[in-house]
Amino acid sequence: MNQISSELKEKLESVNLNDVIPENSLDRQLYFIEKCKKEIAELKEKIGRPLYACVKTFGCQMNARDSEKLLGILMQIGYEPTESEEADFVIYNTCTVRENANTRVYGRLGHLHAIKKKNPHMIIALCGCMMQEPDVVETIRNSYKFVDIVFGTFNIFKLAELLDSRWNSEGQIIDIWEETKDIVEELPTERKFAFKSGVNIMYGCDNFCSYCIVPYVRGREKSRVPEEIVCEIERLVKDGVKEVMLLGQNVNSYGKGLAEPITFAQLLHKIEQIDGLERIRFMTPHPKDLSDELIDVMSKSTKICNHIHLPLQSGSDRLLKLMNRKYTKEHYLALVDRIRAKMPDVSLTTDIIVGFPGETEEDFEDTLDVVCKAKYDSAYTFIYSKRTGTVAANMEDQVDEAVVKERFNRLLETVNEVSHTIITRYTGTVQKALVEAVNDHDDTLVTGRLTSNILVHFEGGADLIGQIVDVRLDECKGFYYMGTRV
Ligand code: 5AD
Ligand code: SF4
Image (cartoon, rainbow, N blue to C red):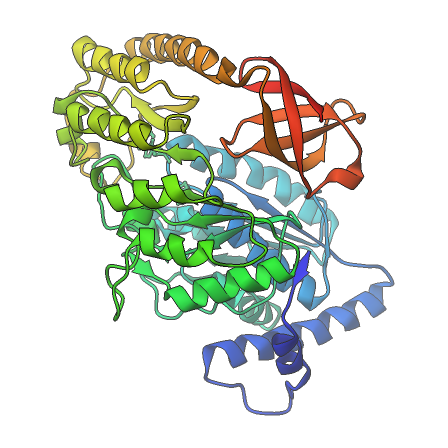
């Protein structure tokens, strides 16, 4: 779904490549998009075949949204999209939240190099969070010279300009910014789904949880103005979108730095008024500042989904303090109670880290205790990964690997038990499901998502994709349901 407004189309058509290169960020990028488009057209003509681009996303939904922007630019330039890395342009949009994300990228680069040796037109680019780490960039500069373009999280909108620089120079192009200087939001995007979309409401994070590298790679918190967000969602709805996911590292601090401050709950209220929009999701709120105002707006809303992702990280007060999370176990559980009092049927999910430095058996048991009491629908569980530059990286007392593994398995068992009992609560009920796709394993089935974020598979065809339909949930199969359309 290439999303390009008529206004943008007009602007692109009026670009004159004989003019001086514009200074203004948007006009400048449109200039380079047109310039690249011309070069790609000539190349396609010369080699007599289409050119393909592959965007691989690692990490979170922020990155997934950024990838749609990258693909939007590449398609505007004239590349055809492909999932295959045997392409003419391959870009890895990287994550660095845990060490294994970095290892995976290095591992795959060797494979890309082999493909590139066979294709003289191939361009390899790396961007995203991992590129904001200086030692990573040094390694790429010294040991991965075949990588053509390296950029970070703050300048993804510059892709066309960087590609043009690469074509006009011999070596690697490296362009890493330390912070947001400019944000150009108006460029074309290529949405993965016609009926749902992520929408950035803010960038960066100021929380500095002691284990987390995100504040160092995504910079300081910066909110978009509400009018711009509402306008973007209105455009998406006109284009067929029924569900939006509002994205921010901590949505509860949305609006604080704006000239006219506004709360996240107030923003939700504005978005709720958009005609034609059917579902609103958001990711991620921090338990330390989830307000009663937000709970109130959610409980009265007909569009905000019945789901809150509320990262716990640990149930131990001692570790929560060391993690700089600014809440206690008691505070977290009281918040869960306040949420359930107003939304008894709400679906809660969470993130948990096992093996934070100094974690004792007692600390870990506190985490298990919260899992049992909070009754999560599901939990993402992570083994602590030491990230250089964070406060926790210098903490002594890293936990023995075997102990961490054993705790991790115990945590999974508890999470599975708890979630299985809680998810079955819908058995036999009829719920609304937004149909997302034909089932991967059985093409007589489609997969729909409930407002609680649980998936249901039921009989149906591709014509249902993007529709919200009533489905009876016949049988719970662990994390999903089998159902029947009614
Ligand atoms: N090690 C393990 N997990 C981490 N997360 C963030 N940083 C780390 C780390 N250093 C997890 C947190 C966060 C999720 C996105 O990733 O649980 O909520
Ligand atoms: Fe997303 Fe965090 Fe990974 Fe960056 S480091 S891609 S923000 S999960």
